[in-house]
Figure 1 (cartoon, rainbow, N blue to C red):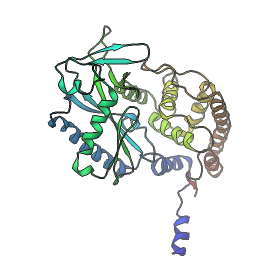
Figure 2: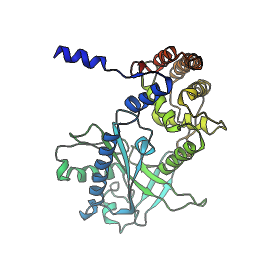
Figure 3: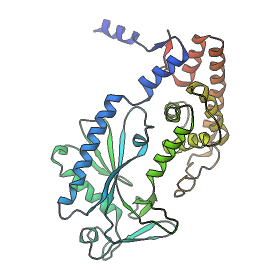
Figure 4: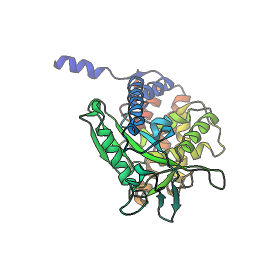
Length: 344
């Protein structure tokens, strides 16, 4: 047994040039495993089918004809290993309800005839309580026979479902799709964690990701994945996923023209992070205000790490230009760690 362990430890990823090293790194350590991703999609689609049957229980509210939509980094194809969560939004039928927007919350007023929604309102009112809606989802998820041993909870915005058979958690967010406002824009109302509602628009985020990726020569998706791996290492404070995505999208929407090679792009993104990590970053959807919630100290540490790794990346590119692949790969290992391939 000890002999087999020694042999296994020798089977590390190797590469004889930088392009091969990044291709192997992305395939084996960063991007989601294709097999697990396919399994996750099948599991997600099965769950969607079960959710769409919830109104068969006459006490469960009606679901909108648009049904269930995918959102989050798994849907935007920017999730990296491990696959820890899969997000979906279930569009509920408003049944002639209306909403009122206040400075710190949104309230949904239910039509008195919408019996299944009225039962989820605040006591002695027709104001829909988002916590009660999530609890209703929890109860219905618990009634799915195949999920008998699942761990089902309520967090701030979602009902969460963790199955023994998979490593990921499903986050299931109930929502309502509004009619178009005066500007012709519709959006989704999702739970705010306090019993009320807030605005969201995952379709905007998905389209922004698609259009930015199509705009550039490099795979912007891979750049985001690489930097999620970078910030996830225990070498600096972690930049939250959605904020990091938008920093990188802002860079690639700033008029730059990218190379086709991810390694040549890395110092450019590091420089952009260095110059912008202390700044506010307003939610591109216009709903959340500044999404940079890092403390000053966290921003400073990230800035310093970006500066350090910028110089390492530039040195790596110079070694590569001079055909010294060994030293170039070793420099990239300083940035990305031992999971980055060794020189063959």
